[in-house]
Image 1 (tube, rainbow, N blue to C red):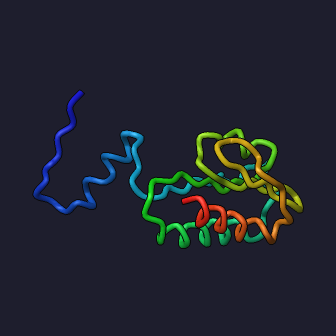
Image 2 (cartoon, rainbow, N blue to C red; image 1 turned 180 degrees about the horizontal axis):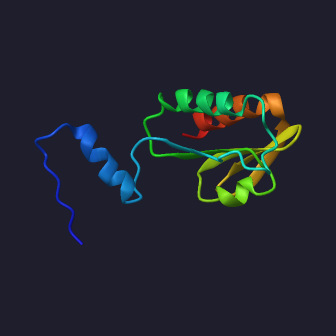
Image 3 (cartoon, rainbow, N blue to C red; image 1 turned 135 degrees about the vertical axis):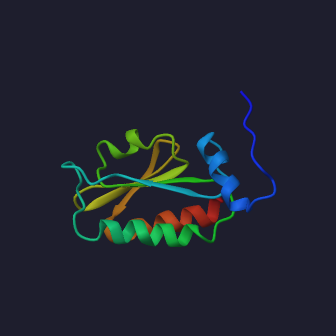
Length: 120
């Protein structure tokens, strides 16, 4: 298969082609849709937004997941480089599908961002 694109246009238009091929050149954030299993109702979208804003400063390919359920979250996001899956009072920080540690909910996003800064 050959994909052709114009090099005379804005380079921002060419990035999505790379993304659709499964190659990302900047961080990508995935999060759950807050289904009935979601253990975080208050503040979930704000936490996702906080991570998204922090990722704007990262200039490497990285897939980050913020999931609302610690039971299914790590499995659903196992292809992510790093992520957090929230439980009722705690969250599980995971990397490549393996849980690194569990933390109190209010420490989860800072720990995730710290791990991203340290590793990437």
